Image (tube, rainbow, N blue to C red; front, side, top):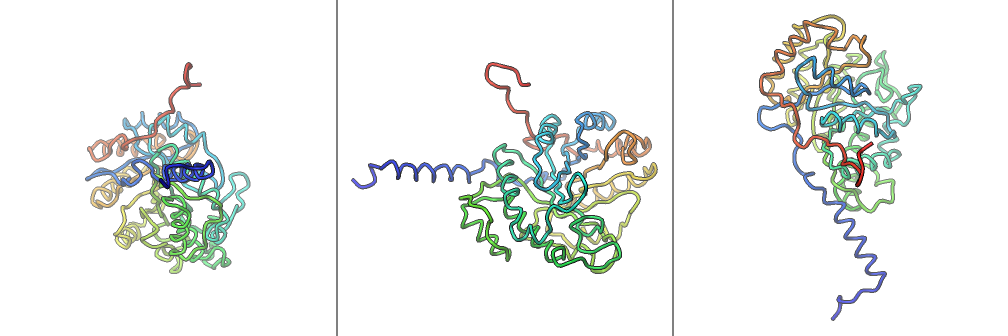
Length: 356
């Protein structure tokens, strides 16, 4: 009977197809990463030292459910993964195209849109899938901040070249969204890129797994500089290519009107305060007002404190006792779970021995 006997070549093809099917079927990947009900995920930034996460938790008497790491495009981050696992906190990965050494731009938004960074995006996709690690990807945050290398406008409000235009940024973000999410054979991925008006994958991969990730778009509430063309709406990639909308909101720049407008404009998405912090002086009033704002705006489902680096940092909450006390009072109201579902776990020790 036809089909009961296979040559070695046909067996090889069948094995490859079976492997691809397994690759594309990521367990649990379809579930939403938005906290359920009235819950809000509270988090803190990653300083590069696991002790800082512990000290922050101890000072607040609260284990943060999230940890946000800031990494450079193209870099590997095994150290970050170890800290995520040690903290048992769901990661947020912010990606910048500024070199971590001298700050030069590694590649432009237009280059990303054209596929020049596809291999890195594919690595991210496969990394989070292979580890079964639920995560948020926050690419090119604060695109309307003139000091960022990928900004569309300089600090005088003048447009930069076409490779950094708002159009280039939106196309770059769409490509990041499609490739990092994955979830299909090569023709399906290329079709999604084509729907986003982008060229096909610049890689020979046969397909991409569906990674358990969600992508956060996070401009400044009003822009820096605060010119009409630098408002958030000009940078929005479109509902199809955004999982969360969010922003950063510090005590030294409290534009509550702009925050309210951003929240209302992008009402189809869960909302995130991807960075906030006490930055210039002890300000418990700001802390209480922001926590009240989160309580009244029920689509706000994520709140991440930025603590910067080092014990003398102006952003270190422990250096502002009144603000720390205000947050400690607010954070224990039951809406802020200490852990997100299925937080990262340390890998099992090797057989016959202890983990190093």
